[in-house]
Image 1 (tube, rainbow, N blue to C red):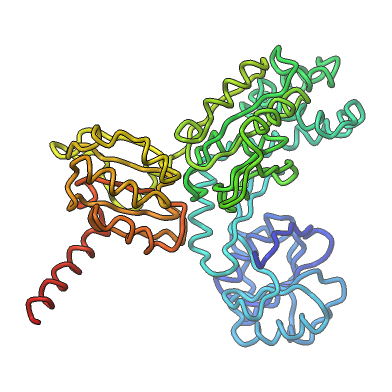
Image 2: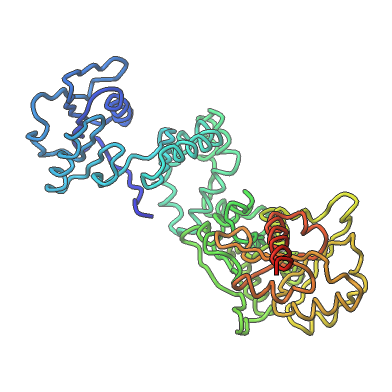
Length: 474
């Protein structure tokens, strides 16, 4: 992040606008909507204010490069040509923030795409790289943001000091406002019935009790959240809400840094995963941490790569929470096998060709040795293996010994949905070699004819044809 979003109070002093034409007038409309005092130097001499509230706009004459900058809080240049570059040099010399439209090199701040809901303002920026992308994001936000969300912010602001005095504890105060926003009082404001909402809030006699009430449950709550295979955009809306509501998050090693960035900034973060080659704290210790957090009244999230109930030991954690009488909920995540299938176009099922799927784990060679491979020889079955890199030779040997064809298509898909994702495809007899090609895990192994329908297989077939032609030529 190069540009830090900062909200500037434009009523503290005049903004100097230099430029002309539609570009300058667009900036005038924006500044006027923010209540700014504007001093406008029209470089073409045309000060047409048609359709613009000019009550706080001062028409300036003369050379803007010689303008008095005392009291000016910022300089904007739009449609100013070379004058804009010169104004940037002058602004920097006196330490004033300056924006030259579409000229990042001569700007010390940028103007974001804005969603304006009164007291709620959302600014979307791309570091100046793509204003069109910023506008598209703004449009998405506009579509989902309630029209009266600004009214809700103003409503809370009117009561904030009195509630601060009644609830001195920050965490409890935050819960109070969350219950107001998410409950019937917030709904009244958003429906335009602020008078009724104000009456309902004033009728809350004990604010602390209201904030601490958990719908009859005096303990905290634990949410098991599937983080997916790595891409933060694959988190469900419900998962994002849980991460934003959490007081403490216990996360695994496989959870990506981008997903961790979605956690509320002031929430405690506790790593409980096992690093490669190092012992973890153990499942019993993790269970104990979850129970202790809930008993302390915290809203805890157990964040796992993939899905909690697919080789995530979520079932054991749920049993521990049940035994302790702790309230819990489970939010599913996209498991790595499905992430790999989607990214690399592997149809795990295919009409008349793959009618069944088996998910299994083989973290070590001895794990593979305990698998009954004879039940996995059906050509119409797709086998998805988790944590199978180390055991790849044993997996290959077990399936070949059970009768699966050595020419069965297989794929090794590493770091799926992440920017450094990589795939290696080939045949079952090549499986250990394929694992060596993907530059480390985590990786999913997919075994079955469906791999031949994947995007990487097209390159594999082309390479096979070229190799055969070269061999024939020799």
